[in-house]
Image 1 (cartoon, helix red, strand yellow):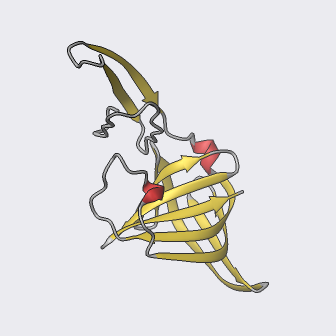
Image 2 (tube, helix red, strand yellow):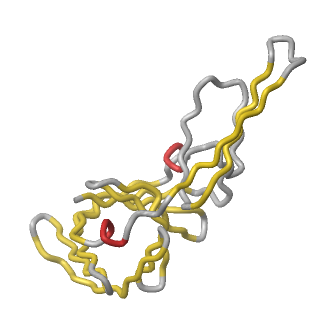
Length: 158
């Protein structure tokens, strides 16, 4: 798959790339007897979300925690066993230079925090922490961040 993932004896393989780049994908077909093979390849390009698509008002709803230091590229980030899932009601306003976080609980404003922010090639730098954007569309964005035992997935929605 060009990123270390390999699949054997499967007709269809769903696969996600979580880092921008060019990936050389190869398929090898074998005859029933195994005496003939044919190899075909193609390079695919995965690009990072645009800066403009990251900016705006987002709602943080969930943070899932996974204890997994080494990741197997044949397993999706979303298929590892979760050890904890937390729900939040936070509004994140992301501008060119900062993230303004407003935490709300049961319709009460609890706190507001401002973090310095920058973005480059799929990586969000917020305060002293960096997060990789692993999935984004017009209504959802998922960030992956590390902690000492594994990683967290942070779910934001419009």
